Length: 254
Image: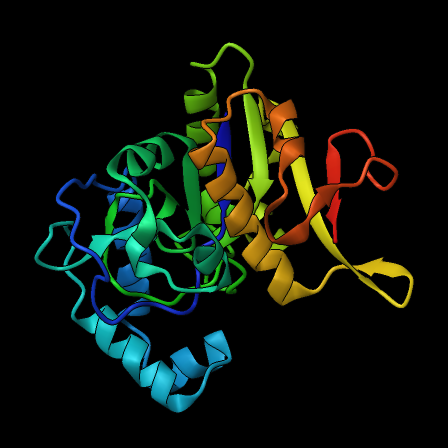
């Protein structure tokens, strides 16, 4: 069983914990093509492309200009300790034991606009580039076209080693769209998290993002291999809602 999650815009300025083990991203050659394209853009072009403020554009311009086309502990740190958004506040990797981090390394994959597909302990450099950015790379019109075949093939290769290949989709719609589900050779389970308001259940983005991280942590800490056991997820007051769930689209409510 593999879990896919999204990266985050918010990053730690320095590694929040020291963990000696690390791995190297698989698709550094592809990442280099993207960074070299970004290095040609002015801060003004970056601001327009990413729809961000001038100070943020300048920050990322500097990041791209100073990019090192290799991964080492001298120029970055592990992905799961760099991202600091809502999902990662739910995941709380900084409080995981060594055993849990190794299990996360086995099960969790992070979708990335720059790196394609990351393991939690892959060394990365600070960046901002959302998967939905309309950045043409070579003959490909955008990042979806650039990454989709590569990401889907890699996931299929990893899932093929499992007795019952299963992918748990805890990524956002934007990032999960980088996977070609028609070519995915696995059972696909998509949990959704809803809040009760005025007698109706609705998705609230902030809570849903954090819940994706919480569920990822729940799977790791409980060493879940059978997807059915995910239905026992009960952190922060959520419970599996059988009435709202259909097939492998599982709804958790509170």
